[in-house]
Amino acid sequence: MIDPHNRNLGQNHILDSLSATEYKRLAPHLERVALPLGDIIYEPGDELRYAYFPTTCIVSMLYVMESGAPAEIAMVGNDGVIGVSLFMGGGSMPNRAVVRSVGYAYRLRAQLLLQEFNRAGGCRNGTLHDLLLRYTQGLITQIAQTSVCNRHHCVDQQLCRWLLLSLDRLPSNELIITQELIANMLGVRREGITEAAGKLQQAGLIDCRRGRVTVLDRPGLEARACECYQVVKKELNRLRLTFQNAPLTSHTPLHSGGRVRSESLSGRQA
Image (cartoon, rainbow, N blue to C red; front, side, top):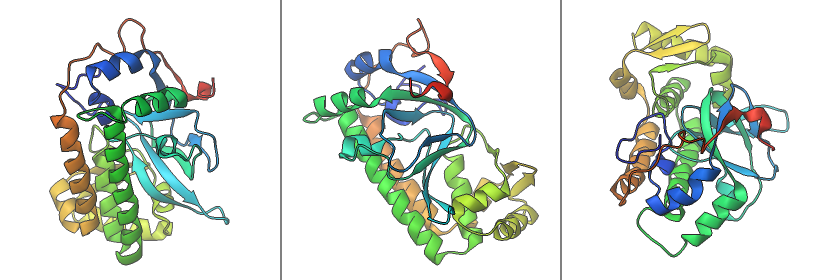
């Protein structure tokens, strides 16, 4: 359930912070959908028919070169929303959005999100309008810092940053992902990730098995990461503090009374 007084990693921070009035308007229209690993939610130029609020999954925002080579520019998990272009005036997706950690999300039709965003435009204190704008600021920080990190820091540091940002958006210390996929996300050679992961494993910071990475020593991993991780984390925490300080009221559970249906993403264009 979405309970702003008892937040947990199984829910989305933006939805957790809705006011009671906004919740009553949006809850009947939120759909819980399963997002399988590797599923492409949007391609560049796609019309945004839905906004997605991840709860237990992570979605990578990728820029794909003409050669087909991808690189992750940002990740979206339970901290945010996929579909920023909707309320920023774009209307279409500027990049590819692909699921890289399986889980669930709530989706909301684009028209309903825009209606609520515009309705709350002149209000303050916990409205969806303000929450979305604050999240967008945090997303811009993440994109900018990713660009800096990829340009100035070694693969070892990039991997540490990437693992830590992923853990911040997951309910456990385990990632179900291959080294090849990590290499694609960071835009580096697989051999570079294999070498970097090997160093971290030898240091006792992570455990790498086939298709699985478990973080054993998070403080140690943070000590090896570049400053980029802390820059992004501090900004998101600063903005999220505003979410938590907003005057909130307990909500009715989303999954009770059939208010939200769970379905596979294969029906997302319904």
